Length: 253
Image (cartoon, rainbow, N blue to C red; front, side, top):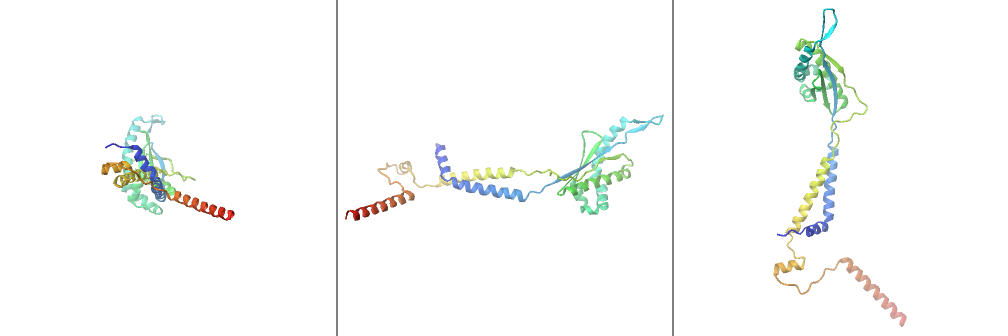
């Protein structure tokens, strides 16, 4: 079966208005849906350091205990797990009831990471409200710093910086045109496919080649289809010609 790309192109161009209507409608609806369902998510973070890495020498001067540095870095992984447990989160819920969050919600909101294999770790809170994210991050940091001596029997946590409310916070999930572009491409491909399928299922005879192929006979003549616009033009020409003839007849008389 020979594929004639020119014929396919003519079929598509013949029904271009259908493509424009369907694709335009689908793209607009997708854009409206993406805009109406977009919910910004904000992030706030605090940084803490595990910093008990010094000891006093015989003269009373403090020296860095490099062995303690490695111990503190290994403790960070333990601290990361402790922070996201009810032992800490329950205390946050009790001490900060104005946050209006449960323990399970806090655990899902909070994420803890260590920074480049250092003694510094970061407590990150994500929320639909930037101000609420800041308050949650600071609350978890304060509770963790106060509770870790009771849990681990060590006091080696210092808050380096607290989360602050920004005037114009930027959400971490920026608006994307991905769904709009995808809706445009899918609707375009589907519309073109339906048009080509529609034309393939249409078994009416349109050309002389179709008649010869079906009936195996040659055509002697054919009557062309006259467009309505041409019919209107011909009627106007006939009416104007009759008017001229009548006018000429009256003048001659």
